Image (cartoon, protein in one colour):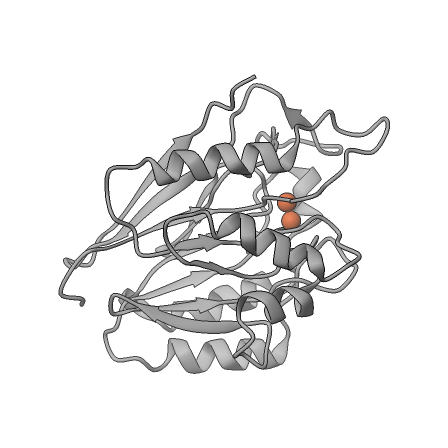
Amino acid sequence: MTSQDLTFIHLTDTHLYAVPTPGGFKSPDPQRTAQAVIQHINAQPFKFEFVLHTGDVVNDPTDPVRYAEAAALLATLRAPVHTIPGNHDQRDWLRAQFYPHSLTTYHQFEAGGVQFACLDTSVPNKPYGEVGAAQLAWLENICTGGGDQPLVVAMHHHPFKTGSEGMDGLVTLDGLAVHEVLRKAGARLKGVFFGHLHEHVILIRDGITYLSAPSTWFQLLAWPGQTGGFVMDERALPGYNIVTVGADGRLTVRAISVEVGA
Ligand SMILES: [Fe+2]
Ligand SMILES: [Fe+2]
């Protein structure tokens, strides 16, 4: 239990500096949509402790300077940013920019009495996710310790298949092993926040809640039993989640959509 409610913002998949490929998705300018989302967040009338960015911060960078630029853009948020790598990130460059104190690309921090375990599901040059044995052992240590301190977990990829073929090929390969480890945390695990799907999705399995936020860039359209590749959802808006870990043990999540001006 904590003595006060803790509120943070969950945003994801900024894909900064992405250049749409000819014939590819007719996607908007990722800096412009990210700025619109940042402006919307900053105008909220309440205090939030930090912003959790669940990866795909930069889109396939070829130079580490992109992370300094991304950090400068994200520093316009009125609270500190914590992030993890996505499949489009270069994870060592991201770590060096955002959490250089950590020797690993997975890491943890504490805020308002809540423990945050930030996984690195990225696999260099692969679109799917994997956590691996070393990180799983690290996570198990967290999940089996910690007394009754509330725990929140962040990861980029979805932990298991959602029933839509396009993105299910890009799942966390050992996500069910991650899930079994997370079950050991019991009631102190409040929620698992992820990105990658570019849409709001809630997954609940064995009492564990996994939630994604929409991308700040473009959204995907998926449906139950969907086959084939990705479909872009041109009607869906970018957005973010407002998350509160309550002192009474609850989790409250508000899904916010952001209109980006012409
Ligand atoms: Fe993404
Ligand atoms: Fe991704």
